[in-house]
Every structure is written in structure tokens, then in C-alpha cells.
Amino acid sequence: MKEKKRFLLRLDPELYAVLEKWAADELRSVNAQVEFLLKEAVQRAGRSKDKLDTPTNSDQLK
Image 1 (cartoon, rainbow, N blue to C red):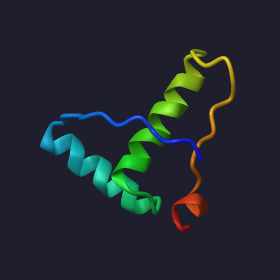
Image 2 (cartoon, rainbow, N blue to C red; image 1 turned 30 degrees about the vertical axis):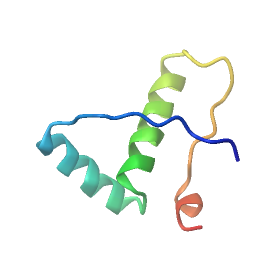
Image 3 (cartoon, rainbow, N blue to C red; image 1 turned 120 degrees about the horizontal axis):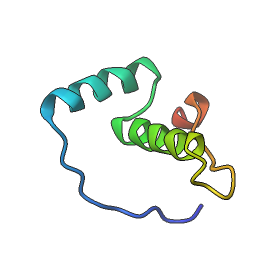
């Protein structure tokens, strides 16, 4: 598995709380949830040349 790029992301505390709850509902970490949502948005916008791998709930349980 290739190493992921790290960067600091500052979020409004209320937005973080919503993401945290959503992530828990889908058995993901907040980080995995944000990455999942960003990948979906990139694909919907047609900004990706390839189909990006999107994490599934089963991937998060490993």
C-alpha cells in the first residue's frame, strides 16, 4: 500500500461533530469518512481520470 499524503485540516467544531457522528454510523474513522466523501465528490464532478478506490465499511474493520 502506498503511503498517504498528510496535511493539517482545520474544521469548524460543529462540522467535525457531524462528521464524527456520520463516520461512527458507517463504522469509519473521521479521517476515512472525510477521504471517502472527497473521493465521491471528485468522481461526481468528473475530476478524476481513473476510478478512485473508495474505502468500504469492511476495509475499515481490518
